Amino acid sequence: MRPLIGLTAYHETASWGVWSELATTLLAASYSAHVYAAGGQPVLIPPYEAMTVADAAELLARLDGVLLSGGADVAPETYAQQRHPSVQASRPDRDATEILLTDAARQRDVPLLGVCRGMQVMAVAAGGAIDQHLPDILGHTDHLATPGVFGTHPVTTVAGSTLARIVGERAEVASYHHQGVASHPGYVATAHAADGTVEGFEDPAARFCVAVQWHPELGEDSGVFAALVDAARR
Image (cartoon, rainbow, N blue to C red; front, side, top):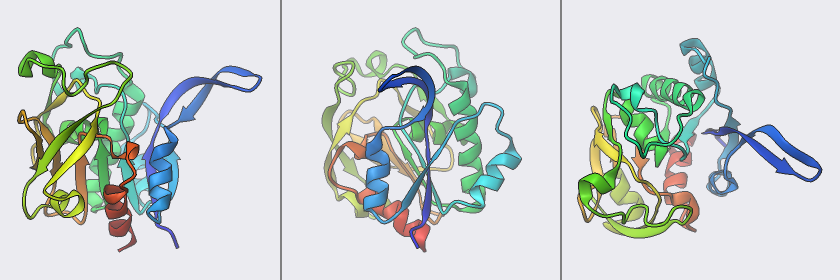
């Protein structure tokens, strides 16, 4: 049987056919396509601000793995910082749901993969913090050069890490983020951009607990998704 992989999603208004501006649970199809191609059975997890610890535990008892998808900035209030002017409108339903799911997955050693925002959620859930606007720190906009357009840049992995095994020593990755992880308690940074930005981290004590700041769902290489599905199958 295909392992069941939960993919976090948005509540958005969407239009199709004769229907206009309907409340919808959605996620870019590339996520589920990669999970399915890797041998997993993808299911969407709608976000609910009212989700409880018990709800998260019940859901995790039925899933074999979790993927925290990309999306809007995590609310600075969740890591006790004042809001930078560049921070996007908060999604409290996603923040609440995904932090609870992260905690539940780590407590139960359920395979967990974070993508872009998902990596930042994992850092915040662990008590870490976010650099709210990288251009202020780095002096360039290479990680998000043009709004609405994904860029690319190389990342280098740490020898012997899970990410090194998956993507190799060096990889060209799709990038779209103006924020970065400032601190990540309990995780080991295992991938970096040339400017030192943390591009990936993992928990070496977990069965599979990995996060990447880039967007692997945009490429043809399903390596990170295959690694998540393989861990879920085991």
